[in-house]
Image (tube, rainbow, N blue to C red):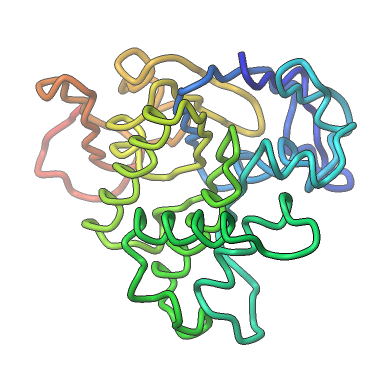
Length: 267
């Protein structure tokens, strides 16, 4: 395992958010965290990345306690893309992506740093945005730039929090294809907090269902996406189709919904 999470507990004051979370991720693996709002997905990512300090438990990166790493060491290992950016001062897209090289900078920006940024911009198809003001971009465009900045860090693990939430369908698929390709080709691992169950099913090697701050179920998509698991975690009746080789989830209605479903009772 490249990353091991052992018995993580976290609370916001008296409200328990994570309870005894234990899981691991292998090199070159994409793991999706799924679950309803408030289930602990974002909090878990922040605990992994040392933004939040767990009340109990440890996060181990290649056998080393993440809690004992300094920020520079951590940034070379783990890249984090949050749900949104608070950047408000004028900055070009190139400069934002260049910030991903900060852990490697000494006396200044090298030609190698600039070359890496240019390659990442090309990879993300952001060359035409290089001199644009970051604050003038749409929410989806900003997410793409933040992912590019993280890739410029050359981390071993990507932590991605709702990366596709502000993207239209085409760009969701493009970003997920890119992440999947980088994970497989570069041997990078990725943990993604995501709401779209079908994207998680299509691209994940492993899936973790979180419910009320605990792991309800975990495993490969074909075994984890079942009507029973979806019912218990989301309170939704669903049909799961396996014709495409990967589970495809069709949500029908909330349990005990008053909506008229035309007399059908799907389970």
